[in-house]
Amino acid sequence: MKKMVVVKMIMMVTVMVSEASMIEQTCKETPDFNLCVSLLDSDPRGSSADTSGLALILVDKIKGLATKTLKEINSLYKKRPELKQALDECSRRYKTILKADVPEAIEAISKGVPKFGEDGVIDAGVEAAVCEGEFKGKSPLTSLTKSMQKVSNVTRAIVRMLL
Image 1: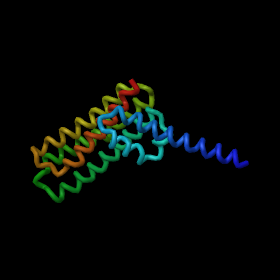
Image 2: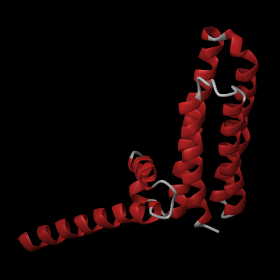
Image 3: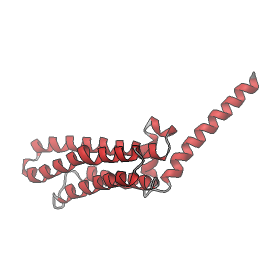
Image 4: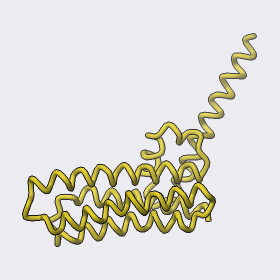
């Protein structure tokens, strides 16, 4: 009986180590190891996901960040009305991420067509960069747009592993 308990414990530890190493192995191939590990470790699905699953988790992170940024844009309309033109452009860009880029990436990765998934992920980073540029260096969204670009780059690296 004691042997079975010990064997089960060893098997659980082995599974936990291999799950962690899957995330770490995958994240080593990205431009930002620490960000990658942090994002994937924060999602309970990460521990049992394959590469495709890890990519989908990161696409969900893009979706969450786009939603957060859009809420911030909406709150800035009241606080900074002088930025309306730039905020309008950013709102369009982040809505595109949510309505086109994220669904495209999810569908493509889920259907095993990662090239189109990569396109959606790249577009999310481009949309964020264009938004940032609208402010001519005085953006109240810099932190969020830079985060989107970093998450997009990490996600792209993982999606490319599926090609």
